[in-house]
Image (cartoon, rainbow, N blue to C red; front, side):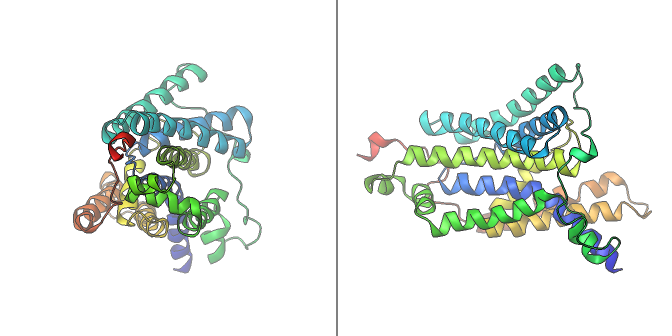
Length: 312
């Protein structure tokens, strides 16, 4: 029984990790006042770049960083459209959600002989499991923590870092200021455009990490259906978490728990369709959004382009 509980908890951590990275990206971006629904596209490009570099280079950390850079470039594109040119942030995000998978598939065909999925990474070149030898095999702690990849611990550490930066540093105060009242922040000498650029690019980097956490740890390659809505679940987790890193973490664990439970139940013959079980995380997302989204209050300037001339 305890082994089953540990397995569910460990699987929860595994599936929550990509969501945590990506949701933190949404937290940073939207606290600066820029809506980023392009998290899905940024995850996809990050997943592809991580898998491709992981296969050709053989170093998971280089692949992980490369995925973050790829996601950051898409974040830069979103920032140029929304911050510099004042484009509709929802439309720009939707465009990125189309652009990310499209470019990923195109590059996959170029680098993998016309295939829409990358070749599998050698198991020795996947993300390391830092506590794999610390805990005895077939014990509660082994199933819970010992068999987890490094991305799990990086994501949990990143939650603390983002929380500290947002609420304990001047940079975090500036990010939240331009998300609440950019004109007032501007009069106090805060560069609204640079702050939002930094936040949106960081959002892309974190989303790229989220994609790489899927292709370098959860599985060992990229395929078109790998992300399949995880970016939108991360977006829902950010909203459910009230645009706070600690809240997003708890929401991601909830969604990851639904996925973990789905995997666990799939091992038994309950005469339940596997398709119905696979729907569980997405149904939970819809239920939570319908139940709570009206009660959540976003940063005051979230989604509103800032035009300096009109504030003077």
